[in-house]
Image (cartoon, rainbow, N blue to C red; front, side):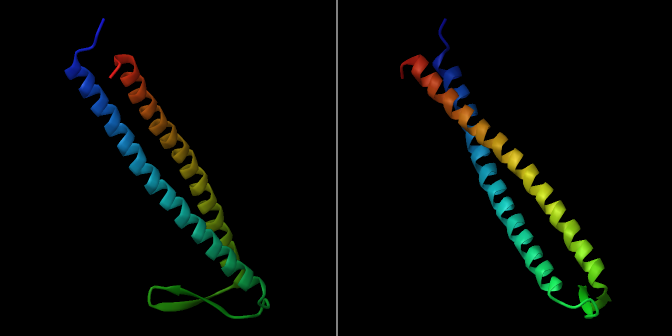
Length: 120
């Protein structure tokens, strides 16, 4: 049983488009991971700088175009919360990256298998 060349070509094009889409998504996810890792480093730097201050130091956070006095403990709590959120986001993105890489690899394998099977 042989697949007609037109159907085979259409199948290869569909698989190739899936591979291309997965490759594009991989680069987007890698960029998002890098951005979130940079944000985590910034939060850790800010937290370490706050840790070097005395507890009675006035700390201000930007809110729009103004600054509001905020206790150091509240700022540390917010930084810790943001850090945990970013780490969870990175974990989710890494799972998505693994899925996309697997999809891309399987698409390539299927295309190679089709060409080997047809002898083309």
